[in-house]
Image 1: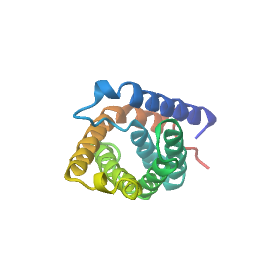
Image 2: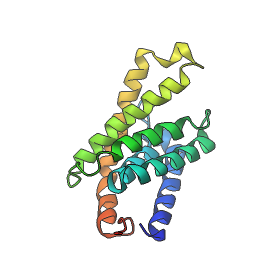
Image 3: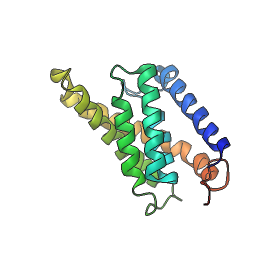
Image 4: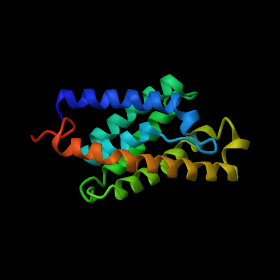
Length: 169
């Protein structure tokens, strides 16, 4: 991917972080909102593989932690692992139907929440594993997958023919 592609991803990441924190009260559904950073991370992993996806997830999660997190590095770890595992499957996933990547975003969001719960549970043991947590995670994952479905076509078009197209070596 050319330098312009990385700049587009950086601007998209910053827009996602801004939207996540400024629009969350308006987009939220029963206290859960979409994770725009996770959507972008999964999309990068799907189109650029595990290595670039994992690096992007690590940097995006670290930026998310530094700006809004309480535990620096926890979101970075969660996004890094999610992108790595999704990126492992980039060659065998049929990416032409937006439902399939949205499904990967759904399961990626559940995996991301599981890592966050494991990381937070030593500090908040009574709150971390309640039944409301599972419902919140399912709601957040569903909501995030819905937004992934909405945003997938423009990203896929750019990843196939535009600025986000992987370089041929």
